[in-house]
Image 1: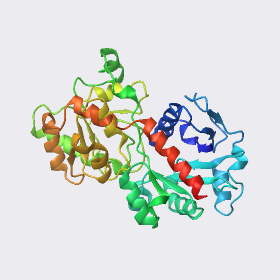
Image 2 (image 1 turned 120 degrees about the vertical axis):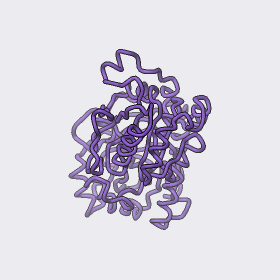
Image 3 (image 1 turned 180 degrees about the horizontal axis):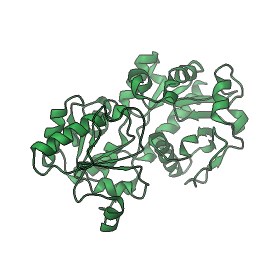
Length: 365
């Protein structure tokens, strides 16, 4: 099977979708008889990083995303095959997939924040309101990253069950082997001796304003609550919800490299994910893989991917978060049980689920 794959999210700093594509490629590289993948870039700039499998190659042609988006808004030309050559299926990894001449289409819909939480997404994400239905009108098969999102997609777009597949994210084995940050790393990054951690894009639906307020109240009323460390891209919008962090209580590190992030997570007293909405919640599973306690908002995705190994807290209740921050020693699980739970999420299994979805799309076409 020849598969065209949108690899554009691999360019630049990788946030959630970029890490998803990188993980998918690593999982595909583990398959003995994996498909031939043509990594397609909707950009004239940037170079792909080295890929882990012999069956990967860059598509022979590129065109810029803005030009293609304007053209595809009014026409089914040019088809994806203009960029890739002959393929059996094209997979759009980031909410949209181009028209095709003969190939089947697959699109990953990571979440429906652009519909349910439109005030928390960027201008680009607002276009998903048009791009996702357009892909579905062309018959695209949908991949979601959790059962929770699969149910939302089926209900929202009234799709039959056979047009939606679930492929959970995986966790790189490096997370289970992550070491505590050494003295040099702590000094270089400005890490306090003890800390609780948030990891992810600092955007409105991550609910950082509530976390900052809850943490401040916990520090004022309880002894031993460690400082809060925030890592991840700066994001957009009013991410603090009117409560900017106090530098005395909160350390904002910003984006961390893949070399530093696992160690920083491993060194945390707990990972805090107070999001009002998630499609999967990869930081939750990565922290569990490192054996770290997790406090996560009580939402469908976190219940699914964290199971009984996370402490679920109402994302609207700052007092509940303050109490949880003061009772970190009561977080569920042990390092061993957390790692065991997370071990079920592998990129190889994700790759196999993608392969089954591609095969279903080709059969339906």
